[in-house]
Amino acid sequence: MKIAEQKSIADLSYYTGTWINSYDKARVIASLTITEKDEKIEITLKNSETGFYSGEWGSSELKPHAYAPDINDIVAFQARFDLDDMDAFLAINENKGLLIIAGYFSFKPSDNRSDCFVREFFYKI
Image 1 (cartoon, rainbow, N blue to C red):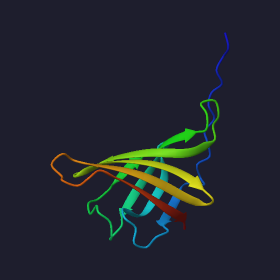
Image 2 (tube, one colour):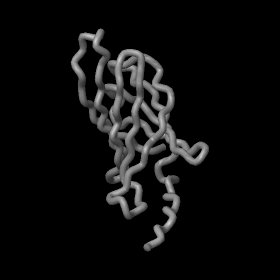
Image 3 (cartoon, rainbow, N blue to C red):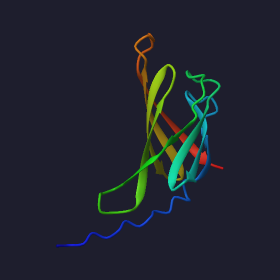
Image 4 (cartoon, rainbow, N blue to C red):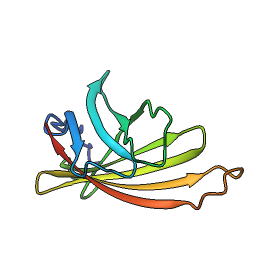
């Protein structure tokens, strides 16, 4: 019987810190902060003043993903937010020094707005 190797902890220091939206009239998120806390990685979002969501985001756990199940190179994350008037699923990856968020927003049944998709780009400060 083969003994499975214990997964090593990936270095997430590249991702931790504050990231600012590259577009000053962002549709949803103005900035985000990624932190490591209690062996978990969290994301905290700040609203765009020009966006369609005006409530507080709070924080959510980021779930890291690698290219394959047998590798430990983190290349993407996902996060979910259950907000007052919508549910948000965020697919996050890095490319050429930018953090890219593909956001899928589903509004509550009592809301007449259409569910929507937004892609935003962030640079690290």
